[in-house]
Length: 288
Image 1 (cartoon, rainbow, N blue to C red):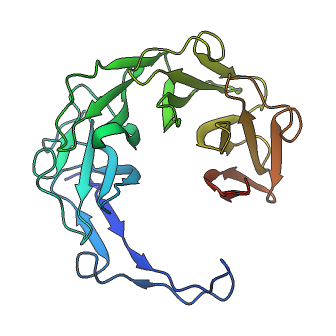
Image 2: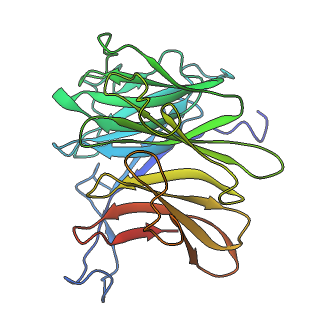
């Protein structure tokens, strides 16, 4: 076996964190949560080349894990997939095929997942050269009542995140890789049925190029007013990362930072940031 022919695996960890009521003050050392699979760990290795991307929790505590992998050992093409894990850390074999839903036609990552009405599962996946939306039923089987919708169809595009507004409209985030810089960040809004919302940005899409020289790998959160806060990778500044806020119509929010942009200094380093949550008082938690 070639030394690089190594099986990639899903490796999930559950921790019990003991902290004081004020976040970040005098936290105790975390310990693994033994109620999760007995050890606080779950190793999913029955399929080759598995790579997790993101997780989404259901209201019942079950965990949906998205990513990509190979159904058959030795296969060169990766297929998008969704796993479901029970609260106790075991694979939920009632979901999909023995716990995994393989997304037919997905030639790579599932890059977004959200629970929507009737406990259905909205997913965003890549199929070169585009990005698509589809729905799964609660049992992991494809929802054929939802027409699979093409979101992006641009060469060298990489989708990175997906959000769902309070009204059910879908925001798909991506960037176009280009050498040399700049990258172009895209935000596309779709109606709940997957059709483009032409009232948003430029015929349904916001193009962010030449705004931040090397801004890419966007991820986002929605604030209480429905505005989109974008963060991501900023490889040119070498000292922090950029946050961008977009109004509900797709224009930059000039009231945020400097005409919609805010640069956060972290020191002499390339940084990728994730805006994880927005509190009631509109304060934002960034992780970088």
